[in-house]
Length: 111
Image 1 (cartoon, one colour):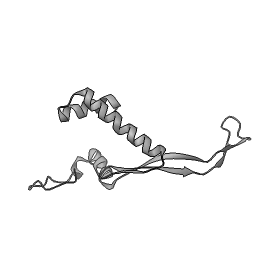
Image 2 (cartoon, rainbow, N blue to C red; image 1 turned 60 degrees about the vertical axis):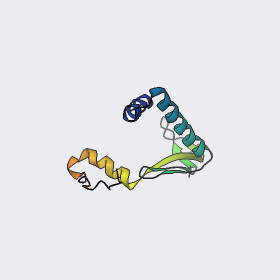
Image 3 (cartoon, rainbow, N blue to C red; image 1 turned 30 degrees about the horizontal axis):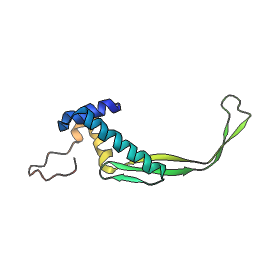
Image 4 (cartoon, helix red, strand yellow; image 1 turned 180 degrees about the horizontal axis):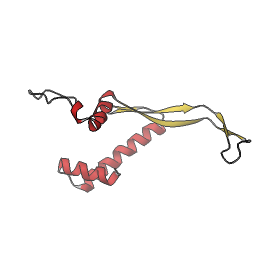
């Protein structure tokens, strides 16, 4: 799915214009990028957590010449940890029989 596909899907579900949805999606992504650049973490309940981790320096072999070692410097890398709810939802796609039954009283807030 591309950003344009995401905008189309959200516009279809909300009734907002694609232009308005595109502006919101772009602002959301910019806010996430800015927070990660500041080494802050972002937690979105029932979706997951974005954060920045330090990757230590390491020695690797040159893939073209295995006799040469290359130093890979320490760096910061963005990581995403999905929530338990997102992991379960992804598994529902693979196993439709694993989907929970609908809540008859409409009080289920897990979806």
